[in-house]
Image (cartoon, rainbow, N blue to C red; front, side):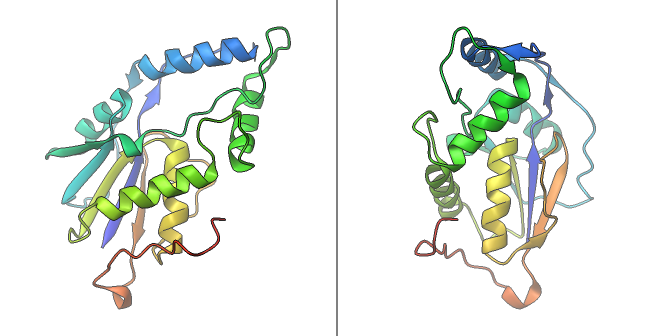
Length: 195
């Protein structure tokens, strides 16, 4: 059994170098509706039996480029929101600081974030509980930070594949369950510590 993870194509949404929290929020909203930059994706010659996709337009458009069958669209596959970790109208910070500190706030369960690490991991497990595990090759088209969390859960379940520090746009990340664990049945380790 193989699971393929693809992050949507790169989004054409330039940003300022320095931003206030308001400008970062405005850029994030603009990013949601910006056009994507399509490219050829190496799908490793695998016949994908089924494809699940985030309901956000950039992911849907990407899924249509890499998969020719019926696509199951699911809002559980949406990106983890990255809100400003502080609200400031006067202080400008570099764009990467807004991203990094927002993710740090997510990790430490800060109230500044709409969803924290526990919520994201629960959402990933909820999605895994509802998919069709009888399929041999499952393709999931989603978003960078959520894919990072999918990889974490796949490793917990015994899948093998590449460890990824930064999920790139339009790249297939492949994970397999070893032969000795087949047929695979999804049993989340809910009682284990979240991290």
